[in-house]
Image 1 (spheres, rainbow, N blue to C red):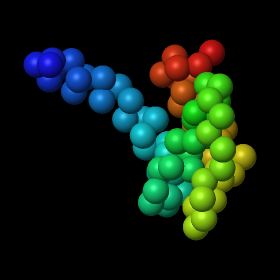
Image 2 (image 1 turned 180 degrees about the vertical axis):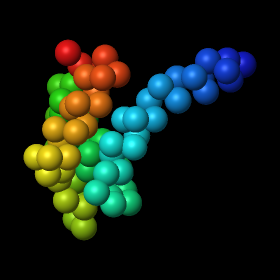
Image 3 (image 1 turned 30 degrees about the vertical axis):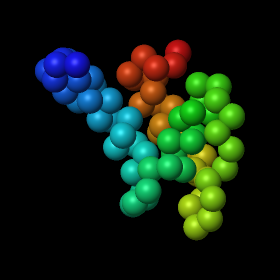
Length: 73
C-alpha cells in the first residue's frame, strides 16, 4: 500500500504486453492473455465463443514481446 509510483512504473513496463493482447483489432484481450498463460506453463484452455484462439502470427508476436520484457527466455 502506498507504492503508487512503483506500481505506475510496473504498469508502464508491461504496456507492450497489454498492447500485444489487443493486436489485429481484438477488442477483448482474453484470447491472447490465455495464450500468454500457456506460454508460461498454465493450462488456460481455449476462449469461449464468440472469442477465438490466437492465430499463429499473434502468438509469435506475444512471445516476442514476452521475451523482450524478460518474462520468458
